[in-house]
Image 1 (cartoon, rainbow, N blue to C red):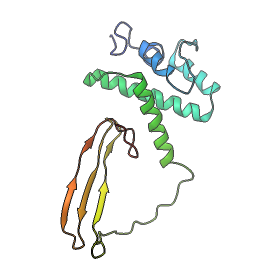
Image 2: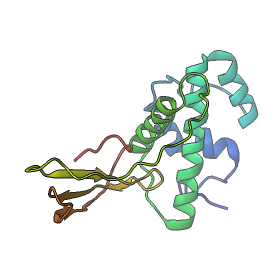
Image 3: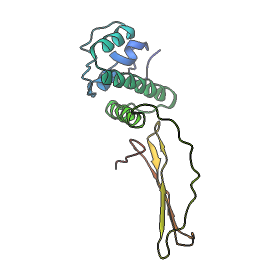
Image 4: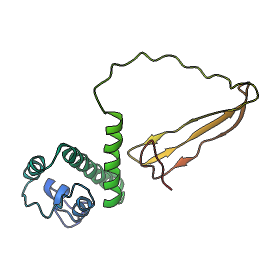
Length: 174
C-alpha cells in the first residue's frame, strides 16, 4: 500500500515515522537535533530505544509528541487528503507540548469546590465588556466572542469572528 507522504514507499512504521522524505524534513526542523538519516536503525523499536538512551527527559517528551503529531497528520492525509507541511507541523507539535506543560506543571493540586459566579452589572455610568474564545487544537481553528452591556445589563454590541491558524488557546498569529 502506498502512503500519502511517500507515494512510492511501502507503509510500515520505520518508513512512516523516520525514513520517508517528509518525515526526514519534519525531524530536520526540530530543536531535538535528531536527524533521522544520521541514526542508523532498522526498526521503529530500535530507533525509539536509541532516542530514549541518548536524550534527556525534555527531549524524550518532545520526541514522543512529535511521533504523535506525525501519526495524526498521516491519518488526516489518509482520511481527508490534507496537505502535510513538515515545518508547520513541527511547530504545532512543539507548541502543543509547551501548552500542555504550562497547564500540567508542578504537583497535582487538590480540586477546590467551584463557587457559583454570576454576572454583575457594571457601576453606574460605565459599560462592561465580557470576552471568551474557543480553540480547537486538531484544526487550529479558534475565535473570540465579545459582548458589551450597559449599567442595566442592556445589550449594546457583540462580535464573534472565527480565526484560522491559531497556535494555542493563548495566542493568535496573522
